Image (cartoon, rainbow, N blue to C red; front, side):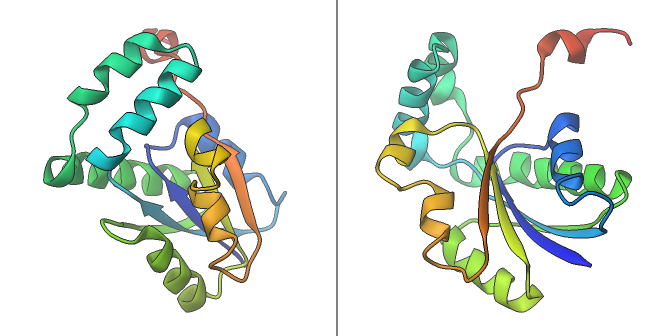
Length: 164
């Protein structure tokens, strides 16, 4: 069985689940999902990324995002949703919310599970990527397995409100 450590920052969309579960064709895949709650130190970077993507309204809403302990419950719900979606797609999956030092936790999980790869599934983070401070860039120097960076699929609001 192929083992992937999947680092996420938002709940997986159906398109994300299909994407990561089909990366290796028909080979069975086991996932360990690491979910990191959003933090206040990232607020400015998230706003800059929103502006760079032309999402001005979203940039103004960054201050309303839960942070610290308030972000823990939404992160746990996102993790539960994501693990269940991977399992429903036929993959083995388990997960952890990571509150501190995500890259150290990642390295430990890769070693413990003898993972074959790391998949970092995030929204674009232009500032962090430019300075190589994003998870994927940093993880490449911390783990001894391939690190694949993928961009998560946004949920189309028309699809979530449509009746079928």
